[in-house]
Image (cartoon, rainbow, N blue to C red; front, side, top):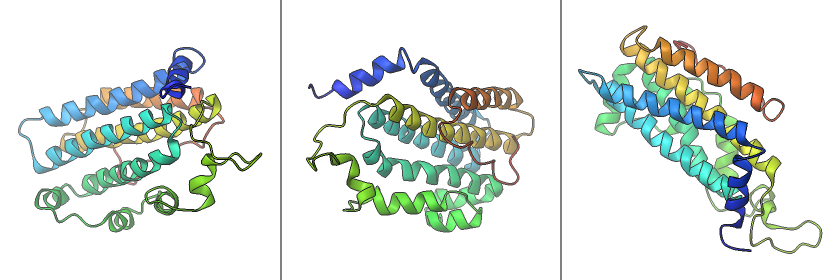
Length: 231
């Protein structure tokens, strides 16, 4: 088996049996890119528009990192990247609910991620705790290491082989987060000027509906946007 055998098998599936799943994820990512571009191009720029554009751009990198590792069958290892991605979603909500908080980002005085989650009554507490325990740091927990062990004979799996259903589930989770990022990006644009991104809101809604259809039965529907959302 070559170093990239799992990735090669994943890419082949994305071009065939998982083509629909790959398409909707790509659209969700493109929506995030569009939101970044619009926030960055606003004139005049404000601390709020600049900070939210930066958070979205960083989120995009984190999402692509998770996607890349999933193609290699390394989704457990991707958990270390997935946690700050979740925190970025909550940070966008935190900034949107009070744009003056962008000054905290500018001077390096933002609260810790847990405090931000409490301030916005975030819905990812259990997920962040799980990632913190089993993915963000090295752990000898079963949840952290079970993918390395063949339960039939106890031998170690040095290579994570391609499993289509596992990849599909991971694509579903990542797409749901990208949709939330798109919603928050659009909301930030609407905070700056209400009605300025209605076309993007329509595009997000179309992507959300397509994702629910393509990934039906794989994972629960993403949580509703936080209070005060414009979408």
